[in-house]
Amino acid sequence: MLGRCSEPRRFVLPDRMGNILTRQELNPLNQPRAMRASSLRCIIGLGNPGPKYAETRHNVGFRVIDLLAARHQFPTPQRMLQAIVGEGRIKSSQVLLVKPMTFMNESGRAVARLCVHFDLLPSDLLVIYDDINIDLGMLRLRRAGSSGSHKGMQSIIDHLATDQIPRLRLGIGRLPPEAEARGFVLSPFDPDEEQVAEELIHQATDAAESVVVEGMEAAMRRFNS
Image (cartoon, rainbow, N blue to C red; front, top):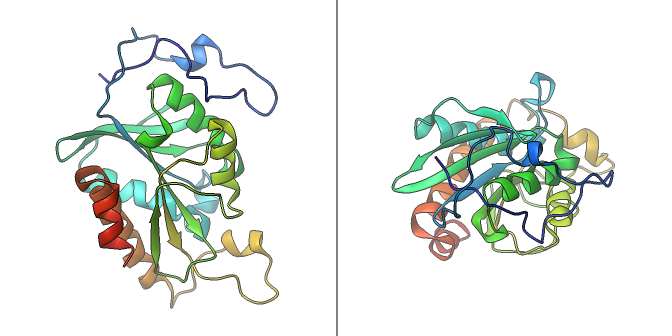
């Protein structure tokens, strides 16, 4: 079983309603806590829960998590701490695969709880999300930086009180002229875009694996070219 912390880390903030995390929220399985498993990595795909959003541009992060879980035969995930969490291995590394269930704009609430529960540092994370400032089919790995107006990533930055969070940004196509961002990201890919989107999901899965197995620097050299 994965290692868990004994106390919340200082970078975790109360949620936006001012609620402090309770003991039950931090350890819903009521299992004994242990010292931190330093090799634990956590890959977080952002999206919105429910079939209504499953095929939208905004949910490419969820699709990468699903493909990673299938490719590496992760056991059935469980719902905990406002997220769907799968626990398994990628090569020799122990990994959590996470889909926050808080809806996109509140992703940080689930991520903060997971960081406390599993005693994760921001540097242990890889957050995967859509980006309308990157051409369809392209991806970018970064160690840190601003949210670039992505509300899900901004929520994580706010709740962890740092922008030093590794991330993988997936190009879903640039915002068309006069289009409204919310409507665009919540729309499905056009039929002539879906093949490119599917190839992007597979490439992003390869990139996430590379980060875990080879490290961020090697993955950036390989996939940011």
